[in-house]
Image (cartoon, rainbow, N blue to C red):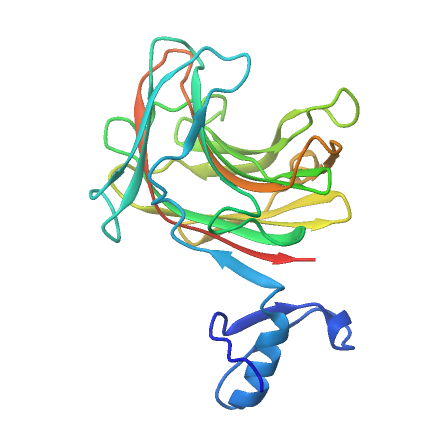
Length: 283
C-alpha cells in the first residue's frame, strides 16, 4: 500500500531518480490522481523538507563573536508586535563601538526538529522583520545565516545588511560571508554582492528570503528577496564562497542564527522576528 503524503504539493526532485533529463517541477493535483500523487510524494519527501515557525524557540543560544567587546543584549518571546501571536525580540546595546550579539538555534540528530539527514544542496531561509521607530538607522549591521557541518565539511550561508559604509544613508549594502576557521584557503570575511536595498522602514513587517544552493564544494548565493522584490548578486566575489574541510572535530549539525551589530557611535536597537522558516532539499 502506498503511504499518503500531504506535506508538499509542490515537489522538487532529481531526474536521476526517474530517468528524466533536466530538473523538473511537478504540481501534484487531483488531476494526477491520488495514487500517483501519493507514490511520487512518498519517494520525494526525503528530498525536500522544511522547518517552520523557528522563532518561537524560547531561548536561542547567545554568544559574542571572538575578538569583540561584549554587548548588552536581550531576547524574549513577545505577543506584540507579532503576526501570529508570538514573535522573537532581539535587542543589543552598550557603550562599546562595534560590539555585537549573536544568537543561534542548533540542530543535531537528537534535537527536535533534527538536523537535515544529508547535505543540504538547496535552501530558502525566510523570516519577517520589524524594527521600531527611532531605531531604524541605529544598526551598523543586521546579519543572519545557516551553518551546516556534515561529514567534516562546513557550509556557511551568512548574509549581512550593512548600514554603515553602504554609501547611501537610505540603503543597506548586502554582503555574504566566507567562513574559514583554518589558516589556508579563501580569506575569511564579508564580500560585497553589489546589491543595495532600501533600509527597513520602521513599525512595519518586512519579508526577507535568501536562496542558496551547493554544487560540489561551492556555495552559490542565488538571490535575496525583500518585500517581494528579488535582487541577484552582481559582484562575483560575493556571489559564491567555498565550503571548508574542517575535519572530524567539526561534528554534524545544522544551525540558523541572527546577529546584531552596534555602530562606531553605539546606539541600542531592537528587532522582532516572526514566521521564520527554512525550506531545503538534500542530496
